[in-house]
Length: 119
Image (tube, rainbow, N blue to C red):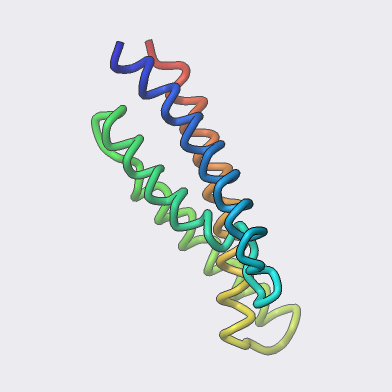
């Protein structure tokens, strides 16, 4: 019974996080000041990823996410230096934050698939 609830909770947390962040962004007009719903959802997804993997698996998968985000940061630095020939911190942080959201979303969905395959 516990694993079934964990599977349902992992899917519901993903959906509710995205919906609530989208509604908050629209409701408070955060797009006018440069915030996207992904800017709010990124830290929440990381926290939910930690909670679900800590409860469902023997070890949490936070190091896996940390390695993926570190590789993303290295690739973005190389991209900015090779393609743009310059490095501007605010632009890097904004690009990393949004790309990190997409990467975390993909890894979270992979974790949900992995969780669904458990007995």
